[in-house]
Image (tube, rainbow, N blue to C red; front, side, top):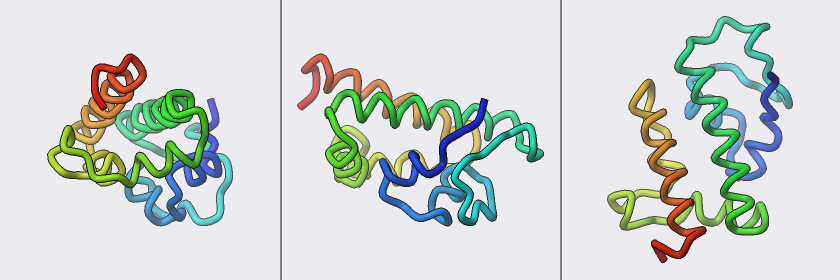
Length: 116
């Protein structure tokens, strides 16, 4: 599977450097697509890529558009300890993957009106 970095940058409204920090993939540069088979990425990084892409697509679905999803990823949320989802998921390694799961669960709560 290939990952659409252009899409990820658009939804998160971040540049390649910030996206690279979140994914722990240095030197993303202007790449639009990332093929893990062409790079030596750790298993955690590949899992994080899958989780991030799924979470972004889910956020866009929950909020009905990219712009609102982007605003939400930059908003300070009490449910995330006063952090924005973008900052919250920027944690490296396994912890970052767990935090992505927490953000996805929060989106599910929003979708089903369990959290406002």
